[in-house]
Length: 342
Picture (cartoon, rainbow, N blue to C red):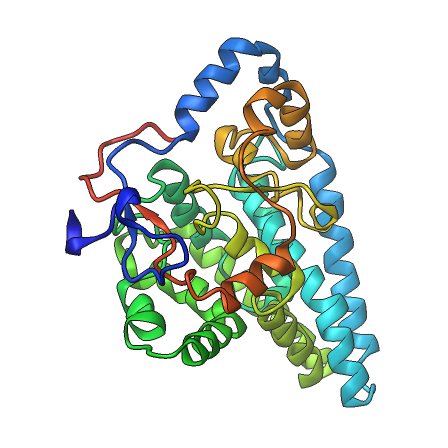
C-alpha cells in the first residue's frame, strides 16, 4: 500500500484521517453504467447535447456585465454584498456551464462547445476553459488514480492542514482557511500535479486572446472596478459559498465509505444539476437537464446510495468535523491502464 496508506478496514469512525483511503478495485461508475443500461436501455435516448445551455450562458454573462457596470459607484458594504450574492453565484454557475461544455453537451459540433465555453469564461477573468477539459476528462477516466486524478488533494495539502496539526481548534482553523481560499488549490493543483496534461495549440491561444481582449475592453470602457467585480466574484465563487459546497460534497468520504455522492436540493437549479453527481459520473454524456430523468428511470440504483443533503452543510462538516480533512478521499494506487475516453 503506497505511503503506508490506510485501508477501509483500518479506518476508525471519528478518528482524524492521517492518510488517504486506498482501494484496489475499479471505480464504481463504469460497472453501474453497464448494469443500468442493461436494465434500462431507454436511458440512451437521454444522451446528447442540451440546446438550452447556450441561452443560460448568454443570460448569465449578460447579468454579470450588467452588475459589474451598475455596482461601480455603490458603497463597499453593498458592493461586496452584490459580489457575494449575485456575482459569486453567477460565476459559479459559469464554472459549471464550462464543465457541461467540456463534455461536449452544449452543441454537437465540438468547436461550438469550445467557443461557447470562452464566452462563459469572460466574467471569470482568467482563461481556463480549454485547459479545464483535459484535466476533467482525466478525473472521469481515472477517478482516484494517484498522480492522475488532480481533483484529489496533494500530500502537501494533507501535510499542511492535518499532519502538522495538533489540537482540534488548529485543525478547524486550517480547514476554514483552506475552504476560504480553495479556488487557488483547484486552479493550481492540476498544473502542479500533472503538468504534462496541459494542452497546447491553437485553441489555448484563442482562449487567451479572447479572454484578455474582453478584460482589456471592459477595463478601457468602464475602469478597474468592473474587473474587480469579476475577480471578487470568481474568488468568492470558489470560497465559502453555498454553491461551492459541491467541491466537498461530491467525492469526500463522509458516509459509508462511498466515494461519490449526489445532492438533490434546490441549488441544482443554479448549477446545471451538478448535484446529480453519481448520475453524471455514470453517464457523462447526458446533459444537465436530463440527469434527474436518469434517477427517475433507475431509482433502484440511486435512491439507496448515500446522499449529501446540503452543500452548505458539507462545508460546515468539513470544517468542524475533526475526522474529515484533505485525506478523506479514495485513491487507487495501482498503475494507470489505458482506458477509452468517454
